[in-house]
Length: 498
Image (cartoon, rainbow, N blue to C red; front, side):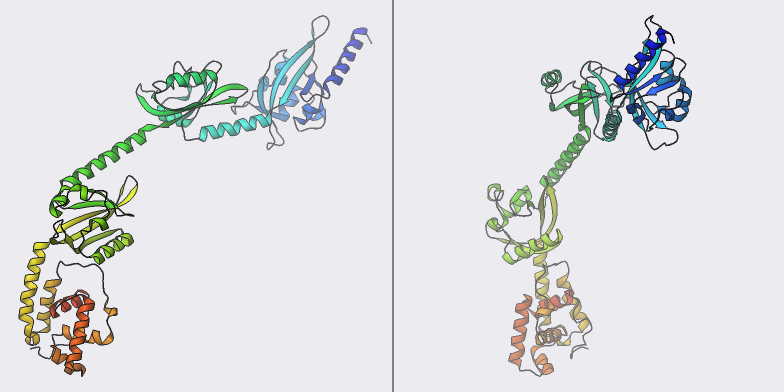
């Protein structure tokens, strides 16, 4: 054996001893592409335990392992690192995904570089592949990539060394109308995301210092040449061992449109509120503090605005019957709205007027409020009372009326006269119900006494109690009360019916 061969073998054994314990994977090849040696780290990075499992040469290696670039494109066989080094190429930082063809569920990511060892004369003698297992790093980067791309908030990542954008997500592209290749590789001077920023000097200073850029309004240029108002913020991060800045954005357009729509809606409401000739009031749902009233309310009730605004309804005390006020707001709290409830209203000068109140729940600056509309029905009530008085005059002797006529007369008073819920028919005793039924049949007290076999004084006492419980003051009002609730529809005719 010649001295040169001995020297070569000695050098190779020494090289193998040096690299055997390295964490980097190392594969040695002959000039004819034969794989002659690999350390344990290289074997582990391919999921094998023996060098023969790598393949005898570069051709067999390509059959046993499928390589893909990080963009998921397959690596052509001629461009496998093992083939490139066999051609004498030297390269560094080639990232490839390595998958055994016999087990496609297993994949590693290798960062590969090459060396060509020369003899003393400078001629190529051995070929070396050196690889790092960067699978965990690649997995973390992949998770970041997925998270970044899936984030609906528009965002771009700028490399701070040259101020060029290296990543952009779909949210940014959708918001601005740019294509991906119109952003990636472009500098911040060409696409200035801080253009028109309200604190641009501060933002540029923070960008130079590689520190957080606080949220601020800015004007972002769009692909079509127009611009959009946004909120922009910057967060420093390290990506692929490089200092970067993550810019994230909030599109102000939807919020601006919503604010404009809300303002227009509020303006329309305010105009309608002011101009309506019907007295209208807005108060808080919880505390019943008056927030606003219109001119019609002040004119009708003769109140100055300072006596109303900021006061509670209890303090103003313009609803004559405190029980009506309590029932009105209890019903509002339960149902959220009321339709035409008759109440008596006290004006500033203590004069009483009859009103029908409609109420609904509205939201003002996200606070629940009650909108009360008061319709003056004093004249209508006066007309009704005059009609009822005439009916009562006629019904002084109702024994000769037919029951149908009595019902029609009773219904005249009940028309268009809604009441707040008060007493129920079940609040009457059994005897009081009998008395009310006979009143509705048109019987006088003496006839009721005879029908029920009671003393006339006892009947009169029962009638007075029924009037008191029903809050009525005459037989016709009692009939109206009963008919409005559909009571005694099947009652027999009165004795005097003709």
